[in-house]
Image (tube, rainbow, N blue to C red; front, side, top):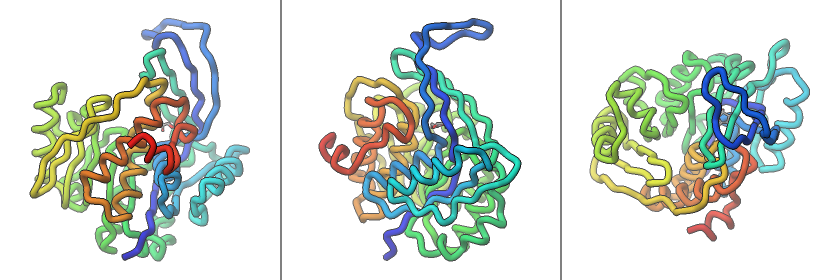
Length: 303
Ligand code: RIB
C-alpha cells in the first residue's frame, strides 16, 4: 500500500499579537508582542504530517507577493513535496490576524486571498498524485465549491479522506458519507448538528450521531480533555497529555497531520490518536503555528 499523504488546503501568513487578555469589541489593548509566522490550517497540517514522519505532498495556492517564495522554501525545508503549490497573479497570499492571551487561548480572523483561487481545474491537474495517495487530509479554508469537488474526486479515486471541519462549514450528507474520518471540535460538532455541544456527554452523543453519517469514524476533539472517537465497532476516549499551554494556535491542525502520518504507518486508530494527541501537546507549549509542530523524536518523548 502507498505510504503517501496528500494535504490540500490553505496557506497563510500569520500576524500574531500576544496580549494579556483578548479585547472586547471597541476596546484597545496595548503592551502586545508581535510575531509574523507561516500558518494556514492546510499548511499547518502538512507540516504536522511531515515533521511527524509522513511523506507529504501539499497542494495549495499562494499569491504573487513576496511571501510565496519564502513559504515554499519553508515547506521544502520540512521535506514537503511542493510541486503542486500554485501561485496566482494579482492576489495576496492568505493572511490571518491572531490574538493570543496569557492562557494561550486565541481569536483568529482570516482573509483567504489566494486560498480561494485553488479551483477544481487545479485538482484535475493533480489527479495522478491524488490517486497515488494512501490518505488525503483536508480542512475548510479553501473555497467551499473546491472542497466539495475534492471530496467527490477522492471518493471516485478510492482515496481515504480525512476532513477536519475547521473552520466550521455546512456539508451535504452525501459528502459526509464520502469521508473516511471526520474530525471536529465541540463547536464544529455543534455547528454541524445545529445543537449545543457543551458537555462531555453532549460531545459523546454528537460523535455517535455523526459516526452514522460518515464512512468510517468520527473524532470529537475536546482540547485539554482529550478526544472521543466513534467508529462502527468501537467508541473510546483518549485523554490528553497535561501540559502548560502557551499558544493553542494550530494544535488541531498538528493533531490531524500527525494522526494521518500514524494511520499511513498502519497504527491502529486508538494508537494513532495517542500519537496525534502527543504531537498537539508539544505544539501548545510553543508559540506560532508551523513553528510549534514537533519532530518525530519530540512526539515520541512526549508519549
Ligand atoms: O489553525 C490555526 C490557523 O488558522 C492559523 O495558522 C491561521 O493561519 C488560521 O488559518
